[in-house]
Length: 408
Image (cartoon, rainbow, N blue to C red; front, side, top):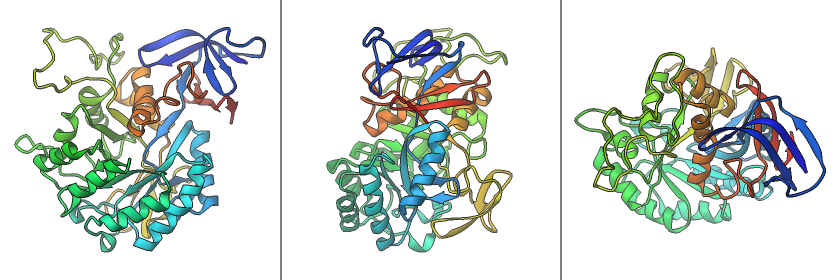
């Protein structure tokens, strides 16, 4: 038994001062086991270990080829910064390259280094491909997808595709049938097409606002389709580069966790879940009202440059320049992933966007865990779940990290 005493325990409904009990790598009820170590946290916050459902690497290492040493180095870097559950995201690549990477990553997922594989491409819109190699983009191919799923041995968890491409909706249905999450992204689809993909079973919007048809008041596109659909989890890259804080605040207001009241912010802005001056019943169309909890997932979209500083890097064979922490394609302006950690995304949500600590924690942990179907064991500090947690200092920066009951 380990007992963390005098902790500010961050739960989905708010922050609670008390003790957290851990035994056999799990969070347990008080008094479940006698004796053990006692760690006095002196009132510091404890948040659930972060769950990053979209990340390409870090510490100079890329996940793209699935090389074990690279994947372990990147995962260990993000673990040290609070990400206790991590996906391995692959950008568009040649068929055999992706196949080899998926097969190698499946072994690492079986070993618990990563929690699964995310295929970001290769079935993406050319006009919205961002940092993906346009020469390798292709139309949805059921045979190729089935091969990748087979090589993944149950560890391919998500695929991002553009729903307007020929055959895309068939691939969405195939993904659902095989237990793979279909995500809408890198798309120029109008709203009707995005809604058709969600009706076909797609359940995630890949990095909302980025690499997709922008929101317009006469054509909402995939942004409005995703935000208005209570079935859909929306990813947000909260690095201050991909999405400015004011827009991130709109995303939290529309789709973020906001189930508990909290005091006004010190900057004078109304809190995201402040009650309306004229309360009204939920809409009759069955959709969740704006502000419904649990649909905004913070992600990093981090690439190899995370933790490495400015310099020249590669992402899926494309040359990337990092200057002042901003990654762009060499000689261009297309953003090429980020250089942040989930700890950065979480802290920015509180300090820059202005959401309460428990709302930011849910977006960084429980919401992506729900989207990935693993919330029964990770994502919140509830008895029975893995003791994956992050202790923060007074400035909401990482003090130390615990994974399955062991400090890392």
